Image (cartoon, rainbow, N blue to C red; front, side, top):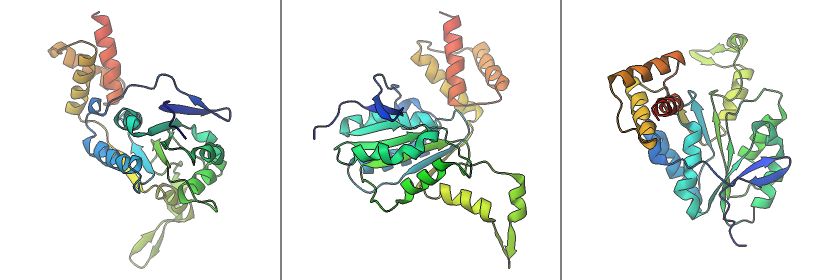
Length: 253
């Protein structure tokens, strides 16, 4: 079966829809996450080369590059057969239908679940657990799941769960609710955490995005404006840096 030249798809209304213009994100455009990039790139390289690789969960602060690094993998490995399929979290119950036609393909498919969060009684929870651990059917070796989430354990955590913790001798053990949440995230073999940017990392990202927009430098007033921009949004991240760069470059033509 000849490989499909389409690099990315989205699952919508029960079908795989080709994405004609995938975002042209490159790994060298993502600053402050070198360790996370290196680990995910190595895992993905193993995958596209037909070697064992793990499902990956990317968690942490908003705007720090979790989604961007997954998208950038297409530019790194697309020519080697990597394909990306965007699957909305609420449609994970369709995973068997998504995966079935991919099994015999020559390409290597990453199912990309962005900003995933699930309630304890959500059917998507069971579907994801089955896909990660495998049910009766042997999972295809050309499909991985890469999920991003702002929640460390993918599900909401409540104060009442602290009452379930119990001491066993000198050890503190979580209750059933916490165990269920931990068990879900632990089904991902690769777990990468993304931390908030330092002030210097944020400014480095601002300079990078300005350079891409044709602005070679940022004077002292510009640096102060960039810091005020981040302060107003209570966030220093790559996303906020990109938004400031667009505003700054746009105002100056």
